[in-house]
Image 1 (spheres, helix red, strand yellow):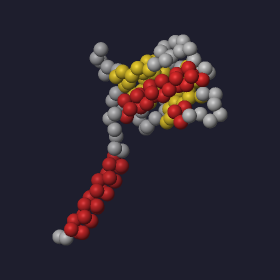
Image 2 (cartoon, one colour):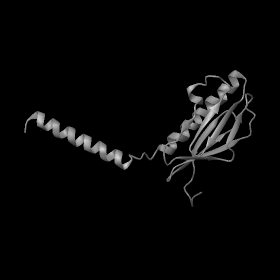
Image 3 (cartoon, helix red, strand yellow):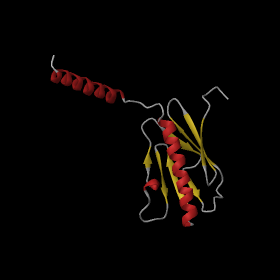
Image 4 (cartoon, one colour):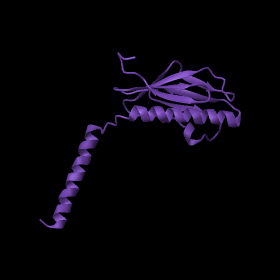
Length: 139
């Protein structure tokens, strides 16, 4: 077998492995954690924006995504609506949260979950804290 033939075989094996991974979905076990951290980071950015500009920012959420309304004609990239990956869900008591410039909003708790893990984001008006929720049946 020549070097060229070996390279062709390796290319075919690589392409086949990639197709199998795509067909199976290539599920990432850290998706909910990544999304919870992204959500907390964007909440912090929204609080900073409200504080710097002196204007409230509104967070709108539903189970499949969230976005921020800054009152600007051309919002920053962090404020644009973000759709969660398939299988990851967001839940909160209210579908909207007003982030005041003075940081005096009541605490809000938002959960991000996939089928295996749940992450809780606690937002106090200025900072967002992410914690893994205990699995069902554990305290």
